[in-house]
Image (cartoon, rainbow, N blue to C red; front, side, top):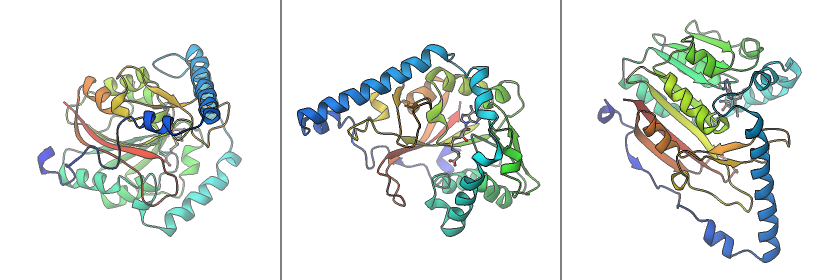
Length: 290
Ligand SMILES: C[S@@+](CC[C@H](N)C(=O)[O-])C[C@H]1O[C@@H](n2cnc3c(N)ncnc32)[C@H](O)[C@@H]1O
């Protein structure tokens, strides 16, 4: 199947050099190095504090409840902003829309794909677009918030549903089984063992993940290449928008983890998006369950 898909290409190193840490570090003065060390220590300590209280392979009930129960005023202006962004530019020039060409290729190239499940969909503009293009396929968006259906009330394609909940529970209980799982900026929030548990819950051979995740930089704008990390030790990072009380995000060695969990990697690209001023690298990867 993979050979028939037009997106399969070797772009492994496009735009990204491994481990630029040493070069960047040497060019800094002592004061800057000290402040970067302090920032890095704070990130490590924050991650350690969180990992000491959160179960390694899932979120605690309290964490899930906290993310589920926000009221409408938390989302309202953000949704208005997202809607006008999507209306003003091609979908490929948005973060969640960057993998639309890959998803279209897969949907056109593999008729076995009957169900698409997005983990952490939030506002489902991209799901709605694809659902209208592929009326024969069922689309399901999952996110924590109890208000998920209200957030997405404008999307009325008959083959599109939204389900509030912790995606791992829904997958493990068999309530959300997909042939294709797209993600955007969501797996970066999973702990290493939690990600592995998701992959174990996807049992149907041939099922795809299409991941589109940020590779947040460390203080000092240091980029750590995911391939340079041990597969069982993801690196905690903090991005500018996260508040002090938010858990850190992670850079995972995505390719190694997916392979170890029974997936073939069909496509892998690390790049800086052209449509944004944010200089952070991202990873785009297509993996298929063996
Ligand atoms: C950074 S947002 C990205 C939202 C959307 N994919 C986008 O790119 O616009 C990450 C989303 O994933 C959701 N999320 C993270 N982990 C999740 C999980 N285990 N189950 C359900 N939703 C999750 C969060 O609530 C949040 O809405």
